[in-house]
Length: 229
Image (cartoon, rainbow, N blue to C red):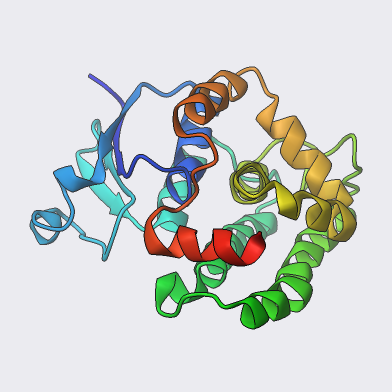
């Protein structure tokens, strides 16, 4: 029996948070297209969510929705939370920050498409501040550009989520790599180290060979590419 089934589109975006984790822990899982569930069967599953990703835990026979909830479920199952119990809350905060950034960088999930002025304002201020927030979190835990972790002395779900967020972002939009290096050099180094882990690197190489620079897809991604260029 497989451990998990992950339902998401053929894109990185929110799906990579879960896939990088599953690859790191060596879970036996299969990735299925979100159309297997969404939208027609969504309300028929146990504990439905508004949209993918969905994770089916085959052994527990339980469905999970919402990327942060899925990551926390997996982090508990594989002991990928920080060592100190109070740091568990901080790990959740990091994941929720990631989810907020995904919403913001897609302009409230595509409610409005970007224009040049609004993007320039967001990139200069809000996105830069988000990067600095992650940098300050790592700095408080002795993260260095070439060593260390975001929340302590060992790899945790927070590191994987951070790499899934910023590593994917700068791969899909290389123009933003300099922003990350300027605002969060320690985080930039962390993302590269997580991506280079032998459990994760082969997955990313295969995915990027298949998908190229794809990010979130559709009109939202076209809007982003127009303003970033």
